[in-house]
Image 1 (spheres, rainbow, N blue to C red):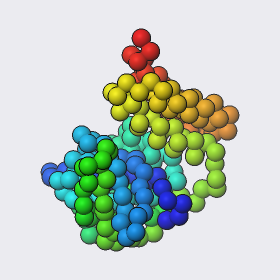
Image 2: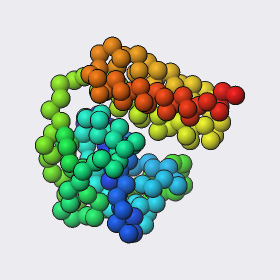
Image 3: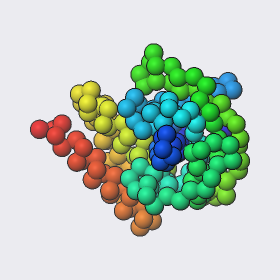
Image 4: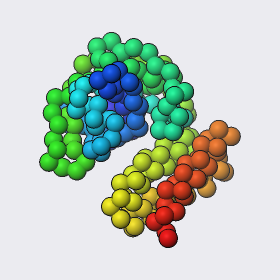
Length: 199
């Protein structure tokens, strides 16, 4: 992994084996992979209770969208060494991990993972697409909104909404039809979230 911070989809399971897929930033620090899930999220609860994850690294914005808004359509295959499955599709790299430390002294907490297994996926093989990248960027900013709204951070909300609006404008010009539908839905969900904040 290069460039420090990467976007990925992290799959975890709860104690009954139910799968949760969450788009999330990951960071490589020394021999550890760091995650920062919010306390109260399914990802945080699952990591603390079952202590396993599979990191699915992909550039496919559609997989990020599906994992956030329509996870029931994702397809999975079993992992080799951990219970959380791998996402099928255009995934570049699978990293199966175990939790080695949880640092709750910061908010959001830092969860340190150790890689147990890395395998190449079928790969996205996408040429660089502004629309694809901006959909991922819009999703990253969308996931921050609920926390910013709860905290009453109006300036933070405004900055995220500006990024999502810009992404919408560009994707409408240069995206394919499916990405246009996805970015329109993200903008609609954003406007619904902030509706109460504006009144």
